[in-house]
Length: 112
Length: 113
Image 1 (cartoon, rainbow over the protein chains, first blue to last red):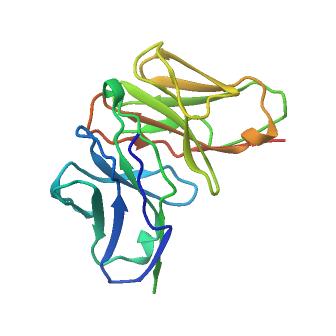
Image 2 (cartoon, one colour):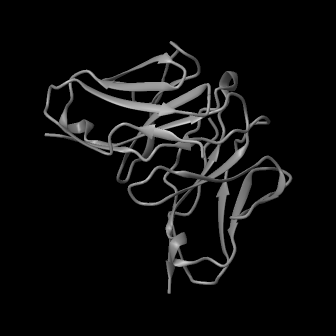
């Protein structure tokens, strides 16, 4: 299983860009990198997924270097409502079952 | 909008009771998962299923069983509830194959007294 390491917590202010980096040194060739967001008392919500280079959607960007041993989630111009826990996951796909293992996540606090 | 629905948002049960947590998805996903989430421990995988009547143990299956009789429904069963099973339980589903994200339900907060 490819494990991930990400900061336990981060602080930011409204309007700033936030970058959360995740390391996954043992990522396998077939693994995708996925980020989830979780608010208190809710299930995690899918944010973005990528395999290599850069992926962008309406919520965030995901930067993945060529060696794929790390990835960076970028949240542009955060607001108070972006305060949440963010999980970086690397897909474990035995037989294509796409079983994901969650780490501790990064607790992002956005301040006024 | 696609959904994963968990039957109860909050549940209180007594020690020794048999508890059923139900999860239904409307996306025709092959894979379904049960996690529990506890403060300081994150999300831990209990069981998962990749097809009807198929199941695989996750990281913490002890004290739990599952049932998947229909593709859209995945049930978690606590055979004899104990206080250490007080937790937030999260169900998720995903499409078969690499590169697909999970869709989670809103969770069931179970308290065993």
